[in-house]
Amino acid sequence: FRAAQPLVLFTAARRLKVVDQMLASCVDVLRDVVPEANRFVETWARGLGQWQMHPDASGYLHADVVGSPPCLRLRGTPGPTHEGLSRSFQSLRKLTVRRLRISRWSCMDIRGALGYVWFYDHRGQFEKCVGGVYKNGGQLCFLARDSNEGPNTTMLCPVDPDTRYDIDASFSDADEDHMMDATITVSIDGVPQVTRSIRSLTIPLHRIKVY
Image (cartoon, rainbow, N blue to C red; front, side, top):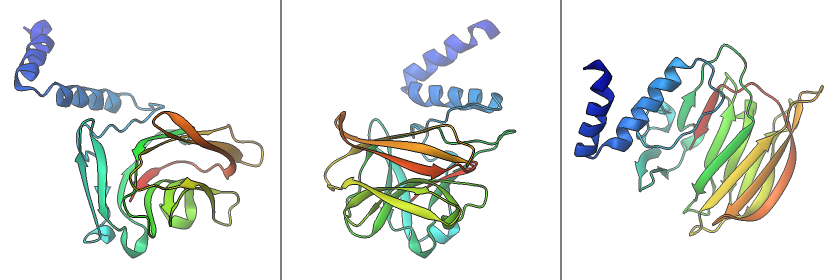
């Protein structure tokens, strides 16, 4: 019976129309038993899962997963402390960011600073962030640290609230000064719109924040 269990479970999941959820659970289990996986992909197929909302964002920011394929929807603002959803990573080795890909990024409100997807070290403080993307006013921006002094913003392109953007950022190996080259491409419907190259300080990755 043990050998037939996978087929029985798959048949039951297909009958109940929960195959996607079952496959997502299987992938999560496999990730847990591989101690140093070198890739993290969030499809939102299991909802918010291991993402946690910071207490300081309560009452300001609301998160849920909608649509097919599923995507994260944020409503509200991060509040006064730059907090929102976060997910931490544990590894026996220091983790570094090599590539960031965001599909269907959009922001309905063109005012203020919103739509953050940022990398942080173990301290999780705004001024110690590794880098990431966000919207400031009417511009999609990339934030990186070019020194230990603090983050530096580069404008990528204007933001249209009715447009969904695909963002692909790759990061080189660090040089002897602990600096790396970040190359960011923004596309619409698979067509590249803009590419920027930015120097960025290499910092160990511990946490992703979205807000």
